[in-house]
Amino acid sequence: MDDIILARAIHVLAVLLWIGGVAFVTIVVMPSVRAANPPAERLAAFHRLEGRFAAQARIWVLLAGLSGFWMVHRAQMWDRFFDLRFWWMHAMVGLWAFFAAMLFVVEPLFLHRRMMTSVKPAADFARMEILHRILLGIALVTVLGAVAGSHGF
Image (cartoon, rainbow, N blue to C red; front, side, top):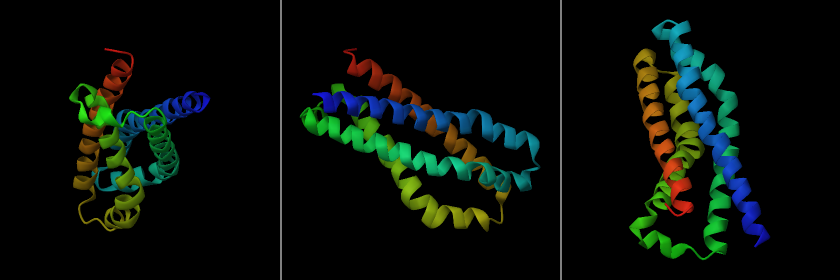
């Protein structure tokens, strides 16, 4: 069972840095970019800052997914996905899948190119800020549900 303890520790660390990073970008970086730059320059300013975080986010999302899969596999918890009382496990997998798709497929293959050639950078930044807020809200509910649910609530 030592491998499950290690997997749980890695999982918590990865989620902390991943969702903590999303929170920092959403409630600190984006409002700072909005306040310090004219609308037409916000998207470019954001990309200058966000590039360093994206690589780290990929690592944390990958580690969260691998450690989560290992815990479910090793502890034989697959049946929880058929029980709605474990809704938070569905939420974790869904949130992880969305971020993994965005970080590993959509962003590098499509989104960066579109954002760099955007004809409406102010509108794109505003949409991106709204999406970040929604995703942060979903992530916080998921983390709250996962911590409470995994401890018997």
